[in-house]
Image 1 (cartoon, protein in one colour):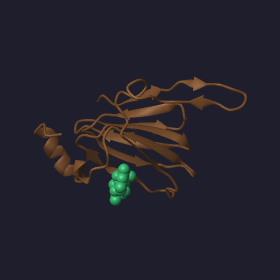
Image 2: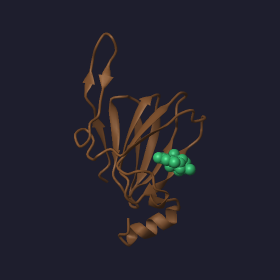
Image 3: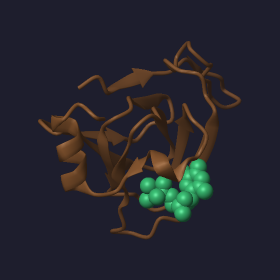
Image 4: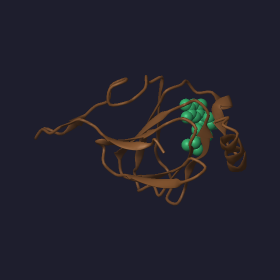
Length: 135
Ligand code: TYD
């Protein structure tokens, strides 16, 4: 699985710390979209789908949560709990997000504009597409 945690630049300062991301540098794609998840009630999960084309970079700007990724063969859990780590999620992976802490803020940077046709919402269909090399 090509998904990986990427450590971001961290400028430590007594006035407050600073981190940043740039297209095609810390993030291995060109950012087309930014969205964020917030006010997630305890015990809720988000995601539960795959993208055919969209790659993502996910940062826990505040609080913590888990991202579970599945390529049809193996399933890996990535825990995000620092604002200077990002998770690179290549296209074509099943992805779920859960275990959100109170006040968790998940920033998601995407490589494509929103397109509902890019989603695969059914896990069995995802597995079938994987086995046929369609995703
Ligand atoms: P969805 O991606 O299914 O949420 P999650 O994967 O976190 O459970 O999106 C939920 C709703 O928000 C869906 O109706 C589509 C809408 N949406 C947009 O309009 N633009 C976006 O960039 C995203 C991510 C979602």
